[in-house]
Length: 213
Ligand SMILES: CSCCC(=O)C(=O)COP(=O)(O)O
Ligand SMILES: [Zn+2]
View 1 (cartoon, rainbow, N blue to C red):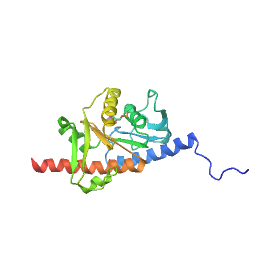
View 2 (spheres, rainbow, N blue to C red):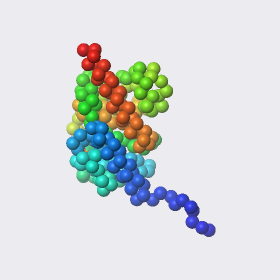
View 3 (cartoon, rainbow, N blue to C red):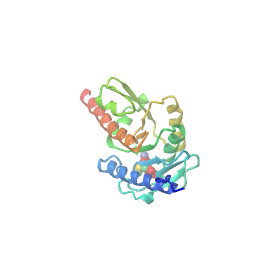
View 4 (spheres, rainbow, N blue to C red):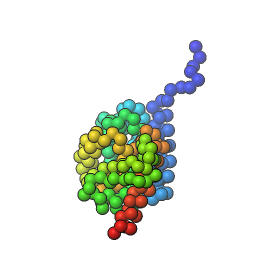
């Protein structure tokens, strides 16, 4: 019998493909000032047990494919992987449909999350761009983005996020106060769309607050 026309994807090919996507999204987000200095981190699911995650401390606009490591989503993160690896891995464990997770540190995400942290959430409504989030079909929806207090104990922060998000299956993002934004998606393209849409929605909200002062 002849070999199949299309070979199944090998683990090394899946990592190389994911690394290329991550390097590309890093450049895309960096030129928009969403990941200043060495902030931000990104990941891509490889299979049911493995995800590709960026290593720690590098400029995310200057990533190379060697800066993206394949990690077991059930194992403790290895030294040198992103300091926030736990915040990625719990999403892959908790939500089998999640294919990509993006973390950004834009000016507006740090400022607005600090200004609204006492409320524990940011409620967004009446914006057409809400339709870029998840399966929303109308500007009339109200989308709640949880805001967690920042915490240098990242495993504790990940446990908090995991617990709250279990009650919120529709949620596609959260903020960490004074820190930044986590978004995810059913593909890298969807995670990137969520990031860009939320950066605009957060800016609308911050500008509205300024006008109302
Ligand atoms: C200089 S930003 C502080 C760490 C952080 O919040 C971040 O997003 C980047 O951490 P990583 O370890 O993934 O480089
Ligand atoms: Zn961060």
